[in-house]
Amino acid sequence: MPVNNRIAEDASEIAGWRRELHAVPEILYEVHRTAAYVAEKLHTFGCDEVATGIGRTGVVGVVHGRGGPGGRMIGLRADMDALPINEETGAPYASTLPGAMHACGHDGHMAMLLGAARSLCASRTFEGSVAFIFQPAEEGGAGARAMIEDGLFERFAIAEVYGMHNIPGMEIGTFAIRDTAMMAATDEFSVRLLGHGGHAAIPQQSRDPILTGAALVQALQQIAARNVDPLDSLVVSVTQFHAGFARNVIPDDAMVSGTVRSLREETRVMAEHRIGEIAAGIASAHGCQAEVSYLRNYPVTMNDPGRAAFCAGIAASVVGEAKVDRAVAPLMGGEDFSFMLERKPGAFIFIGNGDSAGLHHARYDFADEAIPYGSSYWVALVERALA
Ligand SMILES: [Zn+2]
Ligand SMILES: [Zn+2]
Image (cartoon, rainbow, N blue to C red):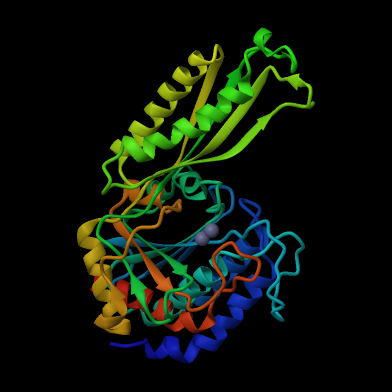
């Protein structure tokens, strides 16, 4: 089965929704207009239930299959939030809100899922029920976790969850997936180095936190270089170093902060542990003290092997086996659909966005040509999972 006929007929209309959503990008949890737009569409399509305000601004639409309520329910998830970027695409439907832009394609994710929702509401060609989950705050706000903590999985008896993200540089009409970690755990750390300031010309009376910080930045690289199996993956990037206020003063303290990306829980725990050890050791060697904070942010986006194989088959039914990469390399970026996959089995898949600018770039744009493939994938997934 290639692209779904009904979806093909609707494709330009779905692209129109995408462009309407693109023009009013909203940030994190403040997706009020977007959520209202989505909820209104779900009502119009004839969803049996539309719930709003879950996890502050999340929306869930439920549609029952031909047998009515009862039976198995699966969840399909899209993200709604945009980024604090000034758009430079020059598109006629470009952002009308300064300082905000759909630069990650969540406008396209919403449109593709809405397209599938309309088709499935009309056809009801499945047993059981589908929950269309639209979450806020994917971009660093853990909106998926907020929806879960607000009772997403208690209010809706969702047995499995599925998600999708567009990828620039992947040909349009292609999908990619793997049967284990798709995206990394994304953690943050900060080390405050407490020294003893003084006159820059009398360093022997000081405990220099800047020299200590310089040593720490170097030393932290040994975690990825010397503590991890070379065939495993770990990123430790120092991205902030703040210290000092005058050229002739050694300051009292310095702050070194960064991010840690990992694909395995053991590696994540090891990195957290080693940052603490190295910071304390380096600080001690320089006569300073280290205060370390480590924030566990998004977990690993972990696909269930069976569901990933199932999804690869669904994708192949839409675009053909040759257009599906079943063993794509994982990305070291994070994705908060991971919180849903921690609680329910399912799979996250990549869809090609063609030759666009990269995600989070001011000239990025979601490719409307990808819509028929994405919406058809959702429809086929529901019809096969709930056959
Ligand atoms: Zn993003
Ligand atoms: Zn995104």
